[in-house]
Amino acid sequence: MSDMTLFPVGARWVLLDERAFEIGQYDSQRQALEAAGDYVRRLAEPRYIMIREDEWKERLLRPSRR
Image (cartoon, rainbow, N blue to C red):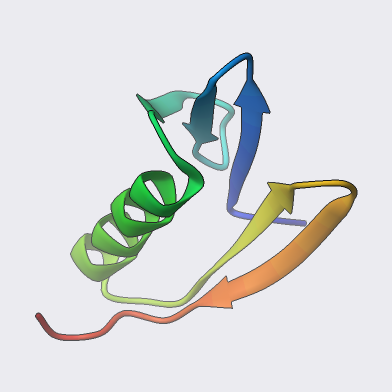
Protein backbone atom coordinates (compact mmCIF):
# COMPACT_ATOMS: atom_id res chain seq x y z
CA MET A 1 0.00 0.00 0.00
CA SER A 2 1.28 3.43 -0.89
CA ASP A 3 1.43 6.47 1.34
CA MET A 4 0.89 8.99 -1.47
CA THR A 5 -0.54 8.99 -4.98
CA LEU A 6 0.39 11.23 -7.90
CA PHE A 7 -1.57 11.33 -11.15
CA PRO A 8 -2.39 13.72 -13.99
CA VAL A 9 -5.81 15.34 -14.38
CA GLY A 10 -5.89 17.34 -17.57
CA ALA A 11 -2.79 19.54 -17.58
CA ARG A 12 -2.32 19.37 -13.78
CA TRP A 13 -0.73 16.80 -11.45
CA VAL A 14 -2.68 15.90 -8.30
CA LEU A 15 -0.91 14.70 -5.15
CA LEU A 16 -2.91 12.79 -2.52
CA ASP A 17 -1.89 11.56 0.93
CA GLU A 18 -2.53 8.07 2.35
CA ARG A 19 -6.11 9.02 3.30
CA ALA A 20 -6.79 10.29 -0.24
CA PHE A 21 -6.81 13.90 0.95
CA GLU A 22 -5.42 16.30 -1.60
CA ILE A 23 -2.01 17.70 -0.76
CA GLY A 24 -2.06 19.90 -3.85
CA GLN A 25 -2.30 20.35 -7.61
CA TYR A 26 0.77 21.25 -9.64
CA ASP A 27 1.64 22.40 -13.15
CA SER A 28 4.21 19.65 -13.69
CA GLN A 29 5.14 16.23 -12.38
CA ARG A 30 8.46 17.67 -11.22
CA GLN A 31 6.73 20.31 -9.06
CA ALA A 32 4.47 17.64 -7.58
CA LEU A 33 7.43 15.38 -6.77
CA GLU A 34 9.21 18.30 -5.10
CA ALA A 35 6.09 18.89 -2.98
CA ALA A 36 6.00 15.17 -2.12
CA GLY A 37 9.65 15.42 -1.04
CA ASP A 38 8.81 18.40 1.19
CA TYR A 39 5.92 16.42 2.70
CA VAL A 40 8.23 13.46 3.44
CA ARG A 41 10.83 15.78 5.01
CA ARG A 42 8.19 17.19 7.38
CA LEU A 43 7.17 13.66 8.40
CA ALA A 44 10.87 12.70 8.79
CA GLU A 45 10.31 9.12 7.59
CA PRO A 46 10.25 7.36 4.20
CA ARG A 47 7.00 7.13 2.25
CA TYR A 48 5.97 5.18 -0.84
CA ILE A 49 4.36 7.07 -3.69
CA MET A 50 2.40 5.61 -6.59
CA ILE A 51 2.93 7.64 -9.77
CA ARG A 52 0.65 7.34 -12.79
CA GLU A 53 2.49 7.86 -16.06
CA ASP A 54 1.76 5.41 -18.87
CA GLU A 55 1.23 2.87 -16.11
CA TRP A 56 1.43 2.93 -12.30
CA LYS A 57 4.92 2.94 -10.78
CA GLU A 58 5.85 2.81 -7.11
CA ARG A 59 8.75 4.83 -5.75
CA LEU A 60 10.21 5.19 -2.26
CA LEU A 61 10.84 8.77 -1.13
CA ARG A 62 13.28 9.24 1.73
CA PRO A 63 13.58 12.43 3.77
CA SER A 64 16.64 14.48 2.93
CA ARG A 65 18.06 17.72 4.21
CA ARG A 66 17.73 20.92 2.23
